[in-house]
Each structure stands twice: as structure tokens, then as C-alpha cells.
Length: 278
Ligand code: GUN
Image (cartoon, rainbow, N blue to C red; front, side, top):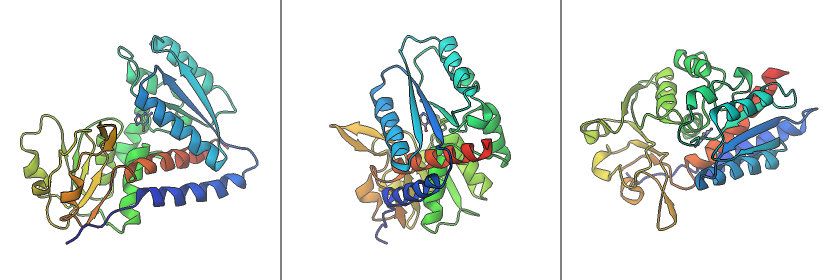
């Protein structure tokens, strides 16, 4: 079966246009604060895209930029100022943080009701229990793409490759909450292909080019590529796209697949936090 490409950019654009209409009806503009420590080039690109999306839909955004030398205490102190700022609806601390900073401590200093990433330990626990109000943006974007593409997750075998806080773990929980049988593979998994070959849905979030090759994919599987890396200045995913698309029923490209959905879901989560705080 020839592959069918999921157009994440189109789906995200439609969500952003819908968000713009919702924001236009609000009496007060929502506000998202983005905290970034250091000059990681990828983080600077990602945060610019987040600010641009806010501007596009009419959400106010603030850039809280700290030097790479900022201490954990200094970062937490900035977060706490934003927690008590009544004009701020959502707070995002861009990851990764500089070496030596305890991510858990910083992320759990974000006020629960302003945690647009859903990375606070309590929000993450709620997600695990299936009672969360906010789900992390990238995995939430993946679930939305599956739904928009008519993929029913319940009863399916899903393999998630990667166990990060940002994608792998929360995505596994969301799939599990929707009734999938979930296998999480990671760097210590012995034979990745044995797991992927039995999967109806494969989601890879590693950042390793051509990790998922055609021989690892069942005919008719749904393949979601979340990983990104650069090869000769070109952005590429984890999946050997051209070959895998010939076997997959549905597949996301990189770029233009999951990436734009992360931004659309951040806007959605900011609107949820704004609504919940009213
Ligand atoms: N770094 C890469 N992706 C993300 C994300 O979704 N949220 C945050 N806070 N940092 C990131």
C-alpha cells in the first residue's frame, strides 16, 4: 500500500486560525511567558516560533532571557515572579536547561495552573492517572494528528521509541489512556525491530536519522516521526521516510508533521490555562 502523508502543517494552521478567532472574542488578551536560560541554538529557534505563533493568534508573549550562567535559584526566582504576576496566564521553561540545573526542581516551581507544558510533577502524575487538564504539547499534538487522520488508538499495538519527559513518557501515557497496548523502547532495548514489527502505530522520538527503516515496519502501520536532527543543515527525522512511506498506511514528514502541532498545542494549552484562571 502506498503511504499517505499526514499534513501536520495544514492541521496546525487550521488550529491556529481557530484560536485566533477565539482570542479575538476575549475581553483580555491571554499572556504566555517563555523562560529561556542560555543560548542553545535549537532552543532559540523553537522559542522564536512560539513567540511568533502567539503574535499570529493575538496572545501576548513575554521573553524572559537568562544567561547560561544563571543558577537554579535565579531561574526559580524568575519563575516565582511570573507565578505571582496576575497578568501572566501561562509559563513555559524551555528545555534543555544549562548543565547542572535540576530540571525537576525548576519545572515543579511553575504554578500548577500556569503550567502550559504539563511538566510539573503533579500535572505529570495527573496525566498518568488519566485525570489531567493539561498534556505536554508534542504528545498532545501527536494524539491530535492521529485523531484528525481517523486513526482509532483503542486496542492497537503502539510502540513509542524514546522515554523523554518531553515526548516519550507522556505520549506512552496518552496512548495508554486511550486504550492502546503500549511498548516503550529506548536506548537499552535489546532488539528494537522485534517490537516495531508487531506495531500498528510506531512513534519515534529519538533524534537519530534513519533509526526506523522499512524492514522494521509492518505493512499498513501508522508511523509518526517526532525525532529531529540536522544532516548537512537539513532537518530530518528518525524515519527513513522515502522507503517507509511505501509500507505505511499513514506517515508524518519531517519537517511539516509533528513540529507545527507542538506550537498549535502550546497555544491551545495557553488558552486552557487562561480559561481556567478566569
Ligand atoms: N524543548 C523541546 N521541546 C520542548 C517543549 O515542548 N517544551 C519545553 N519547555 N522545552 C522543549
